[in-house]
Image (cartoon, rainbow, N blue to C red; front, side, top):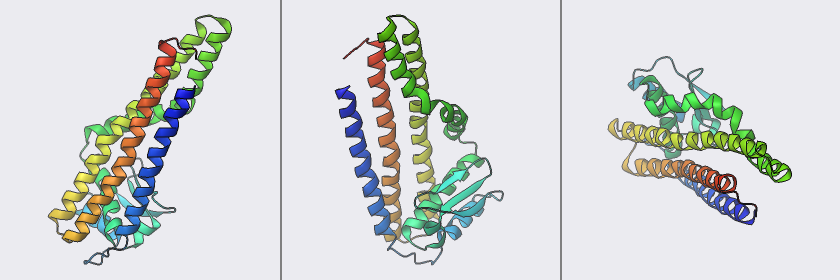
Length: 232
């Protein structure tokens, strides 16, 4: 188990560093005011209109970095700061979330796959590791096959969550690319504002990358424990 704690500790440290850097970047680019004077909400509404999307509502949601697109009720949910403020960071986030709305409208394949996995992962992700550990304990206690099968079931659940994390990557990167292309092509931002928006979105994407790598490392570790028969 020592190896597991080292693994989880290392991943947690990297995740913390990336998350802190992301917060610093957004604070930095929140000081770069947009020359066009548009708020995040106005940026979002214009991007949706430019893509011919009329059935998606832009709303404000409480919290910080709580921005997301909800495909169920077709809403672009912007945190209060992003919704109201008029800076490069707000423009980047608002356009990124609208990028997901555009994906949805255009039936982007990776988004469809991700959405299909949501109900599965929401049920299995919370219990996967407990099943693996419980299966290992049960197998050691009774020296029978039941524990092994319980652990394998946990691995299958864990694999589904890992797959979800990796499918999320192209969804997030594509949404950022759509956002940046629109900001640039429609001359919504100056060169300085664009550079800030691009840098902020790159760091946001890295949080998903770290999460995916962490999920894979976790799966491989427990896979070796179960399938390799390790008892240390």
